[in-house]
Image (cartoon, rainbow, N blue to C red; front, side, top):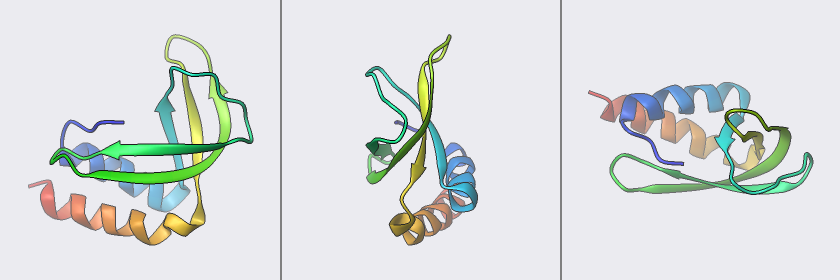
Length: 89
């Protein structure tokens, strides 16, 4: 999942710190309850790899899935939020 700029990263990171829920576009069939890997591509080319559990799947105009990120990534998400806050300006 690529991000256009650091402000977008900050918005998503802040939401992730609070809820651990991330809606991602999908092009493969996913089923609720399965494990899923998520790769976030930062504006500077850095990648953050996360994993979680599929909470729900939407199949409409925008097909996607809500992934609940594993608790073990909590520190990574806080650091991502701080990095995005520093880099957004």
